[in-house]
Length: 100
Image (cartoon, rainbow, N blue to C red):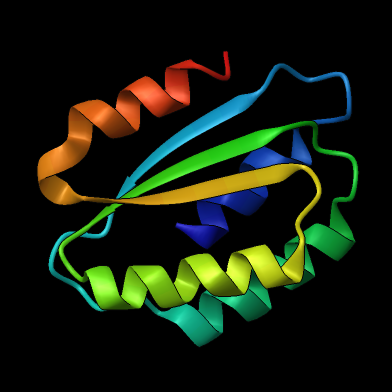
């Protein structure tokens, strides 16, 4: 996922339309440490990518809460990320579409 995201970042600038991403992590553990480190690297490498909104569907809500707290602490100025239980897919899509 993060490799694909970097490819997308390479095509964007501060004038790009908001990027809306729906990620489904399924029942897989969220790779929190790796994702946070890679996220910091991408933030520093591509500071002008425009707005990015990511809704992540997961069944691992405890991990999601931890990741959500870490994202807030890291203060990605152009990125908003929310985590949703897998059964709340429609709510996740509604949240994303608010930012078109």
